[in-house]
Length: 380
Length: 226
Ligand SMILES: Nc1ncnc2c1ncn2[C@@H]1O[C@H](COP(=O)(O)OP(=O)(O)OP(=O)(O)O)[C@@H](O)[C@H]1O
Ligand SMILES: [Mg+2]
Image (cartoon, rainbow over all chains, first blue to last red; front, side):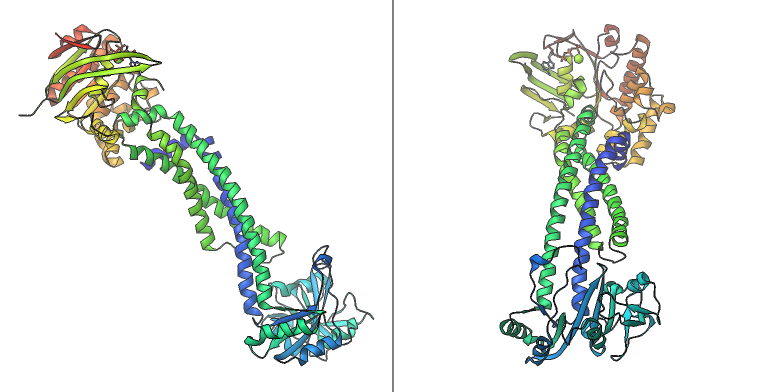
């Protein structure tokens, strides 16, 4: 009886379109928000892969409440040479890699790191578009694609880094491929050179520690925090749970907004379907009079709901792909953060259909209860 | 031998509106045999429609028993009644009661669709019936694009689609002029003659009623046989 349901939907185009719009908006909201959660989860999984999962990050203790202003504007204070030496000497530490980090332009970050130890930084697999790594003795740097294109430099050019004490010139020796994620925004140089430029005197903004074995990670972290009040040690586990907390908040937000949007959509469906049933009481009465059993009436109302919701949910998912692409391109500068997985897309369509079927229940029940005698006697 | 198609035993129908009770039927006893052609006459408000609705399984009696081919209908569920209406009875109404959004052929095929047949099969049979009532060229017309007589012929075709044993027609000519009314009655009469279906027609026209095998008069909720 699909043909009959279709006929009815097309006879009331405006009403059909308005209801479809309600479902469409709800599903688009759910998919778009859901894509960010999904993307973040993916990012967490990937970053655990790229940086060794047993790496410990150490930095100077800082107060969260001081971290105001735009991202990147807060500069964590450096550790002293003694702190770095203390960390390197700890039992259970195989490698201690000091990093001098400076933010600039709100987006870019300079990292000075020992060139033999970039693997700990998770960067050894990034491809070069031009040039290659500097040696530890070189007075040069590697630039991320966006950093290089923003500064409009190529390999062989010289740049002066912001915050450089004596305006020391830095040679551009390599540029990473475009689309290297966070490394698009980075400038990497040898630790010794960074120490000279920023006059850190053997200090570091952050020290990455590689433990001798994964089992000593917690032990090393505890020792650091017990013996040095000024230092904070963060394991990959800590970082992960912080990110998970953030995605958790986002999930709750998605759920909340999705819930409200669903409620609005559901009310829309109930009202339209109900009006449609009331308008058609005579028709339904006649159908019953000429032998439609309850299931037939129910089936027709639900078929209408199913078609309506299937079409608008599928459309919503398609449009969400477009939204998410815009979000990634325009707001996140090409980072593939938001992600629509097949599970998310399929789940959202199924949800839209289920929502409609559930909302059609009451109107369908009203339809089933129509008294044929009233339709026949012309009371309706 | 096959039993009577309808048997009514002391059937009462009482309507209650705002505390006022109306006895539309007051103890009807009636037997209609298979293949009979019966006309029902009677003044307005005498209970003719009420009786037809009860026999047509659209309504149930307040008191008494109704048997269709020996099965009692007051015990039946809504769906069982719907199936009896669908398979055993063809109903023709004074106001045609076609579905406005559907074409003639779709209206006619509807009861067959309800009994689980496909669109193509149902429309093929509907087309045959349209030919029988002489309306093939109106196949794709909607009710509001047809005259009253044409609509009633479509309604008759619809009542026939599931090959019912009985046709119940409640004032089928009530909204039509004399000439068209006669054409509709001719159509019903030929159905009776050709297929031997049991036919009951409510009419106000004594001349048309006289053509039936049997005349029943209703007065004040009672049946008076002529
Ligand atoms: N739903 C109802 N509620 C209350 N009273 C009703 C209802 N339906 C019918 N009646 C009453 O029952 C009586 C019989 O009605 P019915 O329609 O059967 O008469 P009828 O013989 O078909 O009349 P007509 O020739 O005008 O069609 C009337 O008095 C009518 O007012
Ligand atoms: Mg009547």
